[in-house]
Each structure stands twice: as structure tokens, then as C-alpha cells.
Amino acid sequence: MSTRILVLISGRGSNLAALVEAARANGWPAEVVGVISNRPQAAGLQWAREQGFHAQVVDHQAFASREAFDAALLAACQARQPDLVVLAGFMRVLGEAFVRHYESRLINIHPSLLPAFMGLHTHRRALQAGVKFAGATAHYVSVTLDHGPVIAQAAVPVRAHDTEHSLAQRVLQAEHRVLPLAVGWHVKGELQLQDGLVSHRQGASQALYFPD
Ligand code: GAR
Image (cartoon, rainbow, N blue to C red):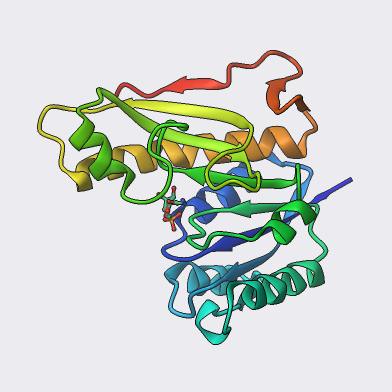
């Protein structure tokens, strides 16, 4: 059975593109059934349209409250009948009703090695903290922001002369590997989620390291 994947974005959409490329290259039993952005100007939305995907805006600014936005977003998502929702650079915090609706079938990519550096400005904070590893985390979403069962993490080194930009670029390359890996595992039914922990049924390594 083919998994219907819906992707939520807010910006450039490079993780969306990496996901689409991996789905095509690896012949996943899955199809992207839509892309929804909360920002009308998101570059990823234009890219999605050019690729022929159903692409839609649910503009958070058009709603008076977070609850109203959440309800509209949920309705728009439900209309696409997804089996899996992927947050690929989606920059709005989702409410409890939305998260609970898609529990265990909602995957996020976050640009840090969680639980370090939840929230925004992860690269700036990593540099300020002086950590020597940075990275990205693909995880199932739970109701608490940037928590939730970790599917896979990819570490990269922090280099002596890194700027926020250079570190972000290195982490982004890792995101483009770890998000498709996690989504591929999910759609192939290779993940087991038990007691809030994710394991790979065949024991594939859920820890990646990209030294370059
Ligand atoms: C990515 O770095 C992603 O990890 C981050 O936004 C960027 C989107 O880039 N997401 C978050 O910070 C979510 N908390 P993209 O639009 O090119 O995929």
C-alpha cells in the first residue's frame, strides 16, 4: 500500500526537495499528495507547483488565534487524506489537537541534536555554547515543542572558524540525509515506536556522522 505523504513548509523547501528526490530514487511505497505552507511567499511552494504537486497556502496571519489557524490547517491537511505528515521547515508551533490527530504519523526535522537547542537560532546558540558537534534530528512530534521520539540523528563537526551561516549550511546537508532516511524507514514499516522510543526493526544505525 502506498503511503500518502503531506509536507508542511514555511520557506525555501530544500528538505522538501530532498524528500521528493529520495522518494523517487528509492522507489518508496509512497507518494507526496500535497504541500502546504503557512507563508504565501515560501519559495518551496513555487517549487512544489512547478513539480506538479498540489500546493496550498494556509496563511497563519489570516487567523485571529492560534486555535483558529490550527483548525484550518487540520481541515486542509485532512482534505488530502495523508497517512503521514512531514514538517520540513515548518516554523509554526502546532497545537495539541493537531499533534494528537496525527500522533505517530507526524515527523519533524530540527536543526540540532535534540534535546540540545530546542526552538529557534540553533546554530547561533551552538556556537555560543562552544559545542564541538552540531547536527540534525528527525523525530516524531509530540505535544511539547521539539520533544518527541527521536528516529535518527546526524552529527557534523563544529569547526573553529564557523559562522552561523557556515554551520547552518553543514547541518542542512545532514538534514537532507537524515529526514529522507527517517521518512523512508517509516513508509517501509521499518520503525517500532514503543514507550516513547523509536528503534529500527532490522537494527539499522539511527546515528549518522558526516565528518565533512
Ligand atoms: C531547516 O534547517 C529546518 O531544520 C528548520 O528550518 C529549515 C528549513 O529549511 N526547521 C526548524 O527550525 C523547525 N524548528 P528548508 O525550507 O530549506 O527545508
